[in-house]
Every structure is written in structure tokens, then in C-alpha cells.
Image (cartoon, rainbow, N blue to C red; front, side, top):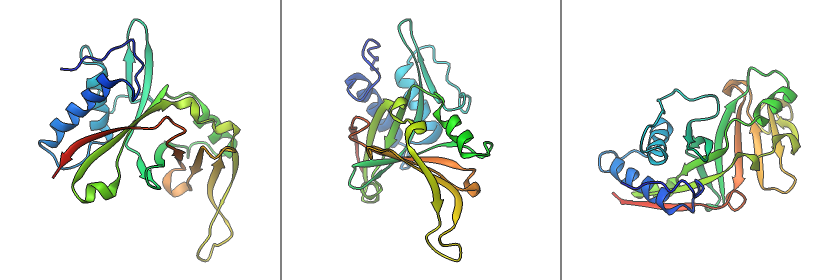
Amino acid sequence: MHRIVYNMAISIHNKTLVNSIKEKLTMHHQLYRTPVKDVYLEDIFDQCINPNNSTWKPNGHQSGADTKLETENLTECYQNKSGQLLENKTKVRISSHRTSKYKTLEDKIDFISKKHCDKYVLLSRDEKEWEVGKKIYYLMIFDSSLFDFKNINWSDKITTKGKNKGQQNGGFIGNDTNNHYRAEILNASTSNQLWIIANIDYIGGFAKIDVGET
């Protein structure tokens, strides 16, 4: 079993961590054809960073934090997400908090701007690769502070089609002035869920994990 080198940051450059994740993914696909996501992603990541004395429980995380690493020298909380690769693997789209309990845009921004985790851990896929049997994952790990929701430009989301064309649809769009990322709070039908599209170069790239073909 691989042992994580704790004096090295939990990042895509930690080869021990990447190899441990690949080992777990390979074992998963010896049994299952479906991709690893949701609670299974959390479980695998926690097994890799906490091979002994894990305190992780399915669906037992705090708001925003799915897994946690606690050592004598380090305490970090992680939000584990699948993510969807876009535009020839130059961008990734991830889902985040539901904000419907906060009634004004200002309140929603205050909530999503709180530090819910230290880092995002994404295990993303290119759907076109999976459609032809290529089981390839793209691991991204980056600081949550890269998303500064209070200091981007927010505006109403406007309907572009149908009878309500030109009207505000209940959602909001936030654009980073440097075009590193874009945020969108959807309308009430989705509990005002936050989605983020980020440039992969901005969040530090990815580690490619190929576990074979069907």
C-alpha cells in the first residue's frame, strides 16, 4: 500500500498520492464499469490520505467539507467534486453550494464567500473519452481562495429564449475581471445552486490518471 508523504503538500505533484488514487481507481474498475464520483470519490480520497485511523463517514461531512486530513503538522479540509471538462480540457465546470435559503444576492455572496474548505479536489472526466471505452480521470487540487466571489462583477442572468426573453430569470452571473473563472447562481428551480467554470491553467493544471480501456 502506498503511504502518503505528509511533509509534501496534498497536490497533483505528490506522486505518492496520485499513484495511490490510481491504484484505488484501478481496483474499482476491476468490478465496476461506472465512473467514480460522489460518496465513492470521497471514500477513495480519504483512504489515500488517511490510510490509518480515518474518521470519515459517508454523508457525515460538514457543510462544504467532504474529507479532512489531520496530522501533527497539518489540518486541511477538502471539497471533493467530479467536475466536467470543457473546451478541449482547457476549462472545468463544477457544482457547489445551494443558496436558496439566502434571499438577496448580497446574502448569497456572503455565504459562498465563507471559507467552507481549504482545497477543492476534482476528479474530472472527458465524456467523449469514456464513450469510446477510455477510462481516464483528470485530478485537480487547488486552493479554494482562488475563487474570490466578493470581488467579481455580478449581474442578473437574463433569459435569451422563449416568451420571457429579455427578462431576469432569477439567477445571477459573476465574472472575474481577469477571465480566470466565471460563477453562476441558477434560478430557484435548482435551489439557486452555484456553478463555477474555471480555466484549468489558473487552478494549476491536472494529473492525468489512465486506468485502461474496456
